[in-house]
Length: 245
Length: 245
DNA sequence: CAGTGGTCTAGACCACGTT
DNA sequence: ACGTGGTCTAGACCACTGT
Image 1 (cartoon, rainbow over the protein chains, first blue to last red):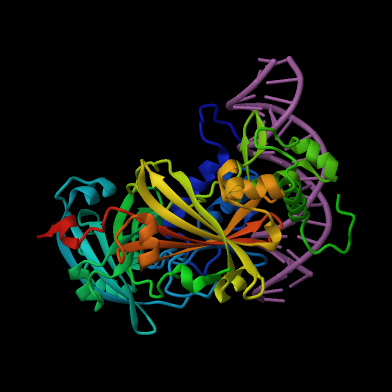
Image 2 (cartoon, each protein chain N blue to C red):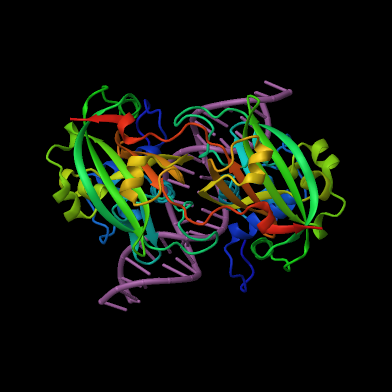
């Protein structure tokens, strides 16, 4: 039912926004299904097909998942590891191993220029810096430095994060902010000395650095994160792959 | 029109397969639109909505692109750089710079174990190894080692690749094989000495290694590729990002 | 203007999981 | 048996592109 001549956005996009707001507000837990397509359609006065398009888009974005015969569910509170499935440790074509998280610290710092720009806050604004260590079968695998504006998350500390089991879980539980990963980018680097100490690894060794921007459901930047990954297995030198004829 | 009681696959998936075969056979160039949804629907005896679902899936897979008012087109012959958009060189949030490709060599080698398994050929089978160098504003940025089964692409040599402008372009032009990227995975490594020489870079420096499996449109593995990326700008040490309060 | 893809609707039946 | 999502159809109108 499109009765508004002023609209610029298609109906299904409006449905998506309205759903994202309600999902962000925690209206449905991850074990409780959303209303059925037909119910949503009637609530929102559109057809079931339009609701379906909106829902499928959110599934593609990783916000929801659906199961035939059961219903549509909010995807599990985002794991701090995120969707870095492309990054091991592990084999190409191998199944990913589960990673264990360990909270190292939650401290106050001031925003540098790059972080401030990414988070759309002023330079020098107070930030929380959360340090996490990732282990795979007790082997250290990665180190995260996550930066969040202090203003938006006043009172956050290590205890809360430990209790909730992660930064994103804390944001959701304590502040009602459900997040989704906005963008990630990767580069190779030498492991700086300070980070090497925390990883218990050799400084200067090659590491995969993942930069991540995380947003709230309504699109506001919430966290800037840098991850140092020890990707283990070294690259093939061309000789090891094959022999010349 | 679903008149086959034995089918296991949904109709739109069958449409996708049939389209992939025709796309792989080069039935449409990248400037010539596919038949309209209605024409395809009538050709294939299904409804326009079913065709639309198949086409949209192929758009999502990067095989096609669509333009309102113009038509549906086969996505440009895959570029050898692939979809490694997450990997610079460049800034986080910066627009990607174009990369220039330089063919170093096309030689014959024998398949090692890992490559043989990935390409589903026997160990020791003859392979082509194609070496490409990538430059960004004349600065060397990456080195590719691409491995392809010799049997499937007999007669391929450096001249063909240079003429066509890339490995994938050659496969399409000379062998009628249109490819799509199957999977990619990344890790950090030290640049081996031999590759360092070809990149004109310092050995042992950290590089981002991208592994890629490429398939033909009908799903057969066609190429295994390893890329060494000099991702330039080094990671932020935590001190450079911000100052403690 | 005609033709394309994009959106939206309405209704039907199927496949699956729960009750 | 029932309700869910998954597929498929048919028809309408809109927005954009090229002529």
